Image 1 (cartoon, helix red, strand yellow):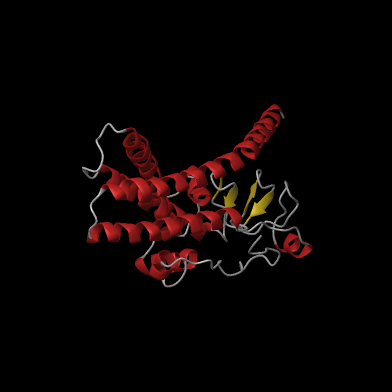
Image 2 (spheres, helix red, strand yellow):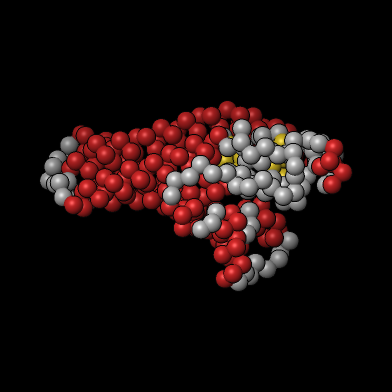
Length: 264
């Protein structure tokens, strides 16, 4: 009983912290992306002489930052797959003890969102939203283009230039600082993206992988056709277009619950 009470207190404390930090970190994330984009286009690239490679860098920067913004905003605004209580779901699935909704397979209750989420991966404070069935593909692409943007900014800032002396105040603020920032953020996000590449290939969520680890089950062994199917199911078909072409498309309606809306 005491253990249950302490856990409930801990959950409420984390929920309260998330309630405060969620909007702040989401705003910080959007502000950081804007700051890095401005540094790249207005401080870093102008340091280099006009050339074909600089023009390509400009075009690549527009594409990468556009993808970053689109997928970040879609992560924030898309309903991840919140399960609305319905009698049909209650008859078909076990009832969640927290929100009294029918709980389809692989759905989990999020205390921050106060609802069950289809194929919930995790609750992300940086988007102030859960990552689940309907917005996972946007989150995956957001990670991809975040580390690509960081790599571009860091590479551009590290390249030698005679446009400004190295100890110039503006260079320190808008070139050196973004370089260090992108190096740190890029490495962390790249590692997280690799983890989600593995999850996509094996058709798992983070929660699925954690459950398998706790149950001491062997890592999933999947074949090449199975990996192709998982990628198409989670990211879209064909996979290269789903990744490279900016898209607002949301995944098809989940087969196990008729009470879920796809968008807020």
